[in-house]
Amino acid sequence: MTCRLPLCLILGAVLPAQLPPLREQAAIQQEWLRLRLERTLPALMRAHRVAMWVVVSREYNEDPVFFALVSPTMFAARRRTIYVFHDRGGSVERLALGGGSQGGLYQVYRDGGRELVGDDQWKLLRKVVDERNPRNIAVNISHTHAFADGLSAGEREQMEQALGAENRAKLVRAERLALDYVEQRLPEMMPRYQEMMRQAHGLIGRAFSNEVIQPGTTTNHDVVWWLRQQTVQSGFGTWFQPSIRVQKPTATGAAVSFLSEDGPVVIERGDVLHVDFGLSAMRLNTDTQHMGYVLKDGESDAPPGLRNALEKGKRMQDHLLARMKPGHTGNAVLAEALADVLDSGIKGTIYSHPIGDHGHGAGPLIGLWDRQQGVPGRGDVPLRPGTWFSIELSARVPVPEWNGQEVFIGMEEEAHMDASGRMHWVLQRQERFHLVR
Image (cartoon, rainbow, N blue to C red; front, side, top):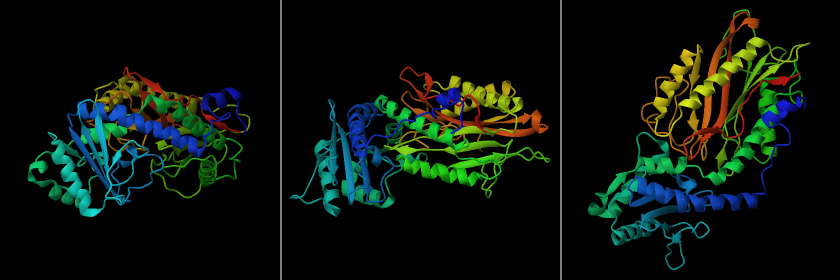
């Protein structure tokens, strides 16, 4: 790989960390699950005044919260799995009416050694509820948040029939319980997540180098599939197809399309490159966008106009992070940050999102790329400490060296809100263009 040493170190392209063996990964994830069930869940149930939470899943039709409640060796629900969480005051009781104990973290009900199925599960649920007599029973139904809308229509009908009229009257839609549980990150997850970010930065650094790109020959599709192949060979998965966009100075000054699905484009000297790339491992996900430049003969860096454009993108990041405060809604943060961007004379768009168990994670949206007036419902959720965010945004900046043609600067980097409510980069943001020689 051709790379100046300081830039490689900044972007993590030197000796990126490797994933531990699968068995070790599973042990780490199991400890995270224990902490979430013993530390995170009770606090959230009490914060949202939920006495009992019932999560119902069927095989291959799992509730979105299901995989945040089960061991890393659990890949689907067992037939039907009903989890019941009951706040007894001192602790939260965890019951599995079907399925396994998840490494001893749940009390499992069986029928003479056999798994419970069908009506037996619903009858037992009624018995469990009657015996505990909770003041309310939270279920996952939501018109707004997919993460809190996991109870299917068929399961809801059967559950309501089984519970009887008195218990049905106790059913509540505690949307924020499911949403906040999936959103909340453990501090113990951060070191592993930082290693994933180093790997993502390292692969992008290699992709935007002469190891992969030969100007005049290599296409953007070649780079995309190199990233996919390296992702698999490095032991990772991904949650979306990477994209490589190529921008060239043109006589017409045509702007790049945000959702371009063009055919292969040959990468040539003087081109600006943009990558959107994510890794998945240990039920965690990354989402990164960086910029690259293909040097012309005799150049040692990108032209000043392009470097200025990148600086404007970084200034937008600074504005956004400064406005991200606990208790502020995503829509409020968006409006304040966009006002700061406008005052700075930057033409920009903000569309940031939580990340963690899912790429587009549970929690407050801070804009969508095509919804800069705010996002009703999903943008009305307040920011909370312990959340990870993809700081995703873009600037369009005229470039003098391109006769005033705009360049699209798309940037995305993970950040987190600590317990005190301060924002920090998970690793580092991109400071300079990746350079292809």
